[in-house]
Amino acid sequence: MNKNLEVIDKIDEVFKDAKEILESAKNLNELEDNFRSFTGKKGRLTEILHNISSYSPEEKKIVGAKSNEAKNEIESIYNRKKNELSGNENKKFLNEYKIDLTIPGNRIERFHKHPITAVLEEASDFFTSMGFEIVEGPEIETTHYNFDALNIPADHPARDVWDTFYLLNGLVPRTHTSSVQARTLESKPLPFRVIAPGRCYRYEAVDATHLFMFNQMEGLFVAHNVKLSDLKGILEETVRHLLGAKKTRFRPAFYPFVEPGLDLDIECVFCGGRGCGVCKNTGWIEVIPCGMVHPNVFKYAGINPKEYKGFAFGMGFDRIVMLKYNINDLRLLYQGNLDILNQF
Ligand code: DAH
Image 1 (cartoon, rainbow, N blue to C red):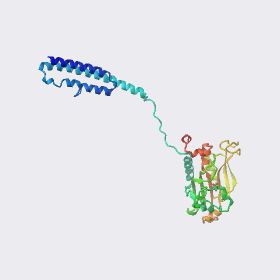
Image 2 (tube, protein in one colour):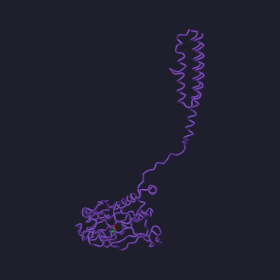
Image 3 (cartoon, rainbow, N blue to C red):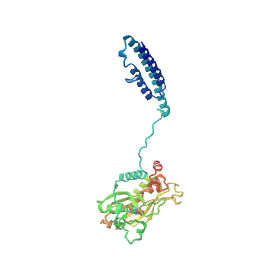
Image 4 (cartoon, helix red, strand yellow):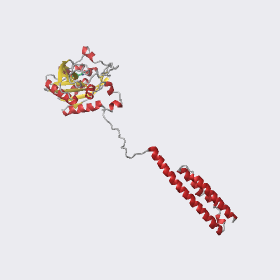
């Protein structure tokens, strides 16, 4: 019976320790580990009973009952503590993260087009709907296509109008998309109508309306009987469509590759013609330089100017975009500033 009593005392001791330790567990992991350290295969309670087989049947009965009782108690302490701790952890999680399932999700920013691209597509759609094709030419050009073939010989003072970068190999970054006119006249079967959008380069002092690089859109319509009235009709419709222009006017202008040469103005869209800073108090804004293809330009391309006529135009495309969106500084379009671009 002595041995028996000793074991019972030990069981009591283990139980007391278990109660204290389990109840003070601070989290579920700790609780789990401690629980195993008492009731697991190598736990303290299990160890005490490892030589129970040497006890008499009487002793076994008493010690067995005692240890079962202790084990059950420990288990119920463990379960109670486990519920308490997991409740706490859930509450802590909810408090920390404050999930409100009724809040709508974040809108995902979807891609949108750069204003130049958007207007370019709009203009391209407009011209293609009238039977124009889109053509391209190289940005690094020969002086032949950039100047000579456009009736601007090397000694002609008009060449100075285009502030040209000259590359060491004698080529030039094209100063206008008119170079594509010259190339297309040479290579495309007649008659045709084309537009040629693209980048151009000039040696400029950079300010709100001038950059080294800018976009133009050239147009060229060649057929047997193209008349000045065709030019007027199509270009007036263009500014009505692209800029919502109500009043337009044509003024005579000089460009070596057209005769006559014209500038198409629209009534200032900002002040309605009353005069403002944008139109420099004239009430008008110049938007499309144009004219009837000069006979020399046809001749350079090997086309008989008596047989074919044409009209050409070349709009500063960035300017169209600026007018359309009321942007007063060209540089804003090219800085890649998302605060600006996201507004379109
Ligand atoms: N290429 C001219 C420039 O950049 C603009 C121009 C004027 C183009 C008259 C044309 C035209 O096609 O007919 O200043």
